[in-house]
Image 1: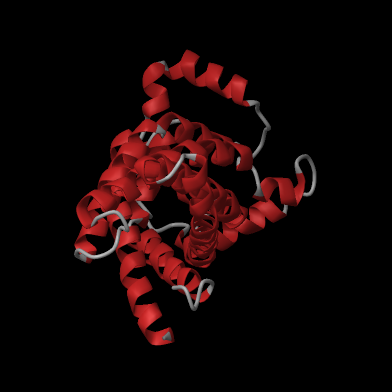
Image 2: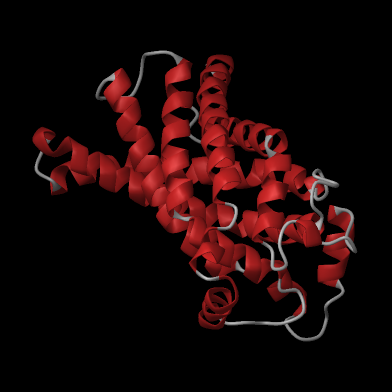
Length: 281
């Protein structure tokens, strides 16, 4: 890793993102349809659960690569300073938490430059019978030359996604790294690769459940293809029409998907990191 600070996270992150998104795509489709206005069956039900998979294939690898490239780089640069700020070894836990939280947040912001257009296209395909594929959904977004326009259409829900990802990743990665250190020791190395997968599953599941309301808002914003609505108006609409339960639509598949996805994502990432490092050295 030290001799290849760019290639290792770039290649390992790309492998982890692609494997995870392809493997769990049907669960993501079901979650999207549960959260979409009108409910599960009005938005496709059990049919075409791989609709929109093309956008996931195109976007998964670069988004995950950007995340881990930023995450690993910020961790390496920030941790020595965080140790100084918190006064040495006895405050290692606080230094680790601050470092991993900051690195994960910046990593998500970088990844969202690719992830948001991918998500817009994917979710339009998942929840609309008139867009049976990623290409059809992309053409529909690009055909919108009036109103919000092409670029704003592709980045619809960007701020809502950031609002969801920042608390999610601020919970997931510090918790993941803490669990990993608890099992493997202070430097987080050693132990089996299964440890990383188990820690990723626990951290991902907790973070997913806690941030489901933000995910519901993000999904609704992205699926509003014909009108622009403020977050305040959207919150009021969901509360009035569906009550508090509306903000937790899809919590079960989201938690299950991200918990299992965390195991695969971080397990594959750690495995790929070892393999890529051994090939490059």
